[in-house]
Image (cartoon, rainbow, N blue to C red):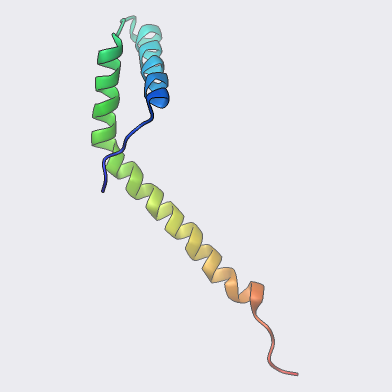
Length: 79
Protein backbone atom coordinates (compact mmCIF):
# COMPACT_ATOMS: atom_id res chain seq x y z
CA UNK A 1 0.00 0.00 0.00
CA UNK A 2 1.19 3.45 -0.85
CA UNK A 3 1.73 5.86 2.04
CA UNK A 4 -1.20 8.13 2.78
CA UNK A 5 -0.41 11.72 1.88
CA UNK A 6 -2.42 14.80 2.66
CA UNK A 7 -2.63 18.06 0.78
CA UNK A 8 -0.92 20.96 2.56
CA UNK A 9 -4.34 22.53 3.20
CA UNK A 10 -5.79 19.38 4.74
CA UNK A 11 -2.63 18.80 6.77
CA UNK A 12 -2.67 22.30 8.24
CA UNK A 13 -6.40 22.05 8.94
CA UNK A 14 -5.91 18.78 10.80
CA UNK A 15 -2.96 20.24 12.70
CA UNK A 16 -5.18 23.12 13.84
CA UNK A 17 -7.84 20.63 14.99
CA UNK A 18 -5.27 18.62 16.95
CA UNK A 19 -3.94 21.81 18.54
CA UNK A 20 -7.48 22.89 19.45
CA UNK A 21 -8.28 19.47 20.94
CA UNK A 22 -5.17 19.50 23.11
CA UNK A 23 -5.86 23.09 24.17
CA UNK A 24 -9.49 22.48 25.16
CA UNK A 25 -9.31 18.91 26.49
CA UNK A 26 -5.85 18.77 28.02
CA UNK A 27 -5.05 22.44 28.64
CA UNK A 28 -1.83 22.01 26.68
CA UNK A 29 -0.48 24.12 23.85
CA UNK A 30 0.99 22.18 20.95
CA UNK A 31 3.25 23.65 18.32
CA UNK A 32 2.36 23.04 14.69
CA UNK A 33 5.33 20.70 14.47
CA UNK A 34 4.10 18.55 17.37
CA UNK A 35 0.57 18.48 15.98
CA UNK A 36 1.89 17.32 12.61
CA UNK A 37 3.99 14.64 14.30
CA UNK A 38 0.80 13.31 15.92
CA UNK A 39 -0.92 13.33 12.52
CA UNK A 40 2.03 11.43 10.98
CA UNK A 41 1.90 8.86 13.78
CA UNK A 42 -1.85 8.35 13.35
CA UNK A 43 -1.52 8.00 9.58
CA UNK A 44 1.31 5.49 9.96
CA UNK A 45 -0.36 3.40 12.66
CA UNK A 46 -4.04 3.68 11.74
CA UNK A 47 -3.83 4.38 8.02
CA UNK A 48 -3.53 0.77 6.85
CA UNK A 49 -6.42 -0.42 9.05
CA UNK A 50 -8.68 2.42 7.92
CA UNK A 51 -7.73 1.77 4.29
CA UNK A 52 -8.43 -1.96 4.60
CA UNK A 53 -11.79 -1.28 6.25
CA UNK A 54 -12.71 1.12 3.44
CA UNK A 55 -11.80 -1.54 0.86
CA UNK A 56 -13.98 -4.10 2.68
CA UNK A 57 -16.87 -1.61 2.89
CA UNK A 58 -16.67 -0.90 -0.85
CA UNK A 59 -16.42 -4.63 -1.60
CA UNK A 60 -19.56 -5.34 0.47
CA UNK A 61 -21.42 -2.46 -1.17
CA UNK A 62 -20.49 -3.60 -4.67
CA UNK A 63 -21.30 -7.23 -3.84
CA UNK A 64 -24.76 -6.11 -2.71
CA UNK A 65 -25.23 -4.30 -6.02
CA UNK A 66 -24.07 -7.38 -7.95
CA UNK A 67 -26.41 -9.62 -5.93
CA UNK A 68 -29.32 -7.35 -6.90
CA UNK A 69 -28.31 -7.34 -10.57
CA UNK A 70 -30.43 -10.34 -11.56
CA UNK A 71 -33.52 -8.82 -9.99
CA UNK A 72 -32.91 -5.49 -11.68
CA UNK A 73 -32.17 -6.60 -15.24
CA UNK A 74 -33.43 -10.19 -15.51
CA UNK A 75 -35.78 -10.73 -18.42
CA UNK A 76 -38.23 -13.63 -18.23
CA UNK A 77 -37.54 -15.98 -21.14
CA UNK A 78 -40.94 -17.69 -21.01
CA UNK A 79 -43.15 -16.14 -23.64
